[in-house]
Image 1 (cartoon, rainbow, N blue to C red):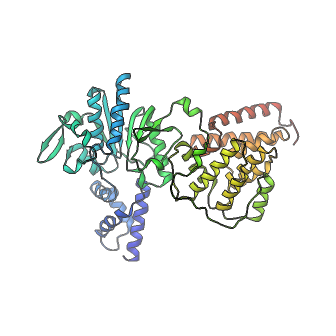
Image 2: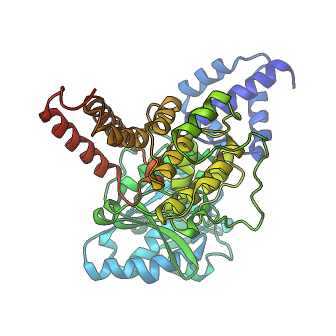
Image 3: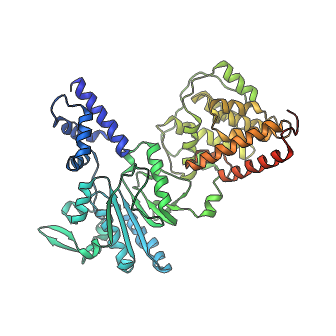
Length: 486
């Protein structure tokens, strides 16, 4: 391709990612190039975007080129067995309605499968299935409800008989009848969007399969959070079996039933308990050993601030992983023991940080593990914080460790909290300011739906520490700004 054509292709890839959240797989590169080649040579991508925004027909054609539309009835039938044997009987027992969502429904076979199975266990009048997809051409197939032989596979055969009585055969096609289609509500939906209009809260079941695998980790975790908001307490969330090791959220508990893994929405009481690091949390599951890079940066002493400041002054080692990146991966692993991203440096660093947290919580020596993480990945706010905690375990806690963490990342509120706690007896005026700043930082953290620091909160949640900070602000404020040494 020419330089101009290459630039148009790269701009198209970026546009697709921004619009849909998808990192286009290489298998779609050729169809995308063929689509772009359909425009006159020299056409700027901005002109193509204008055409996509002007013409719904052209937008549908473009989405059909770049989206993955592979699906069939009762795909991953073992998951439908869990729905049949565990979830639907429980709903039948308690009464009320069954409300499900087929997200990224493509041409609709999944939504039809859910509706047919639910109607075989419950009264059809108690069944509602919502379905959405960004590809409106695929949704048109859903509305038509006509499916060819390729929509039936060996996987799913166990449940195929449930469609009898709900479909009629026309020219070798299976056509979904009106009564079954009436249980399903289809609407356009972009998973990467900030909101999901038309999708209710209080869902009993969500199927979101084979869509997030094409998204970068930050995007897919944001999607999981938005989907989890729609689930009722105790509701179930199914991903494809290959996606499970790449997903987690603190509102979701991993479940296993007959070899099938899925997530259950935690109750408010469960969420308030947080989670604690265990030995299994930081043990890699991959058969392949996780090799750490050797940067030759030396080690730091686990004696708190002096070691931290020495490392900073020496400029020891490039920082390859930020505290937020490592903490996010550590928290994903904490909430899903199957979570693995061994290709990411942040994940490999996270296993070491988790081991350090475990040792600190169980009276062990964490210094060597923290030094290993620093040597491999460079120092960041989480490194300094853990050095400070290691020093505290040896009764040598020093504010310098937490100041170093905040110099690296001023929003790293766990370090600010520890600093404030250290200052409250001797420097109450400064402590008051730090507690107030920490409370504001935690409020922002919660408002943004963040949770990456859960891995170092020792089983508590951020709301607990927000209340703690507010309590100290009231106490120190009532004692007067001039109280205590300055």
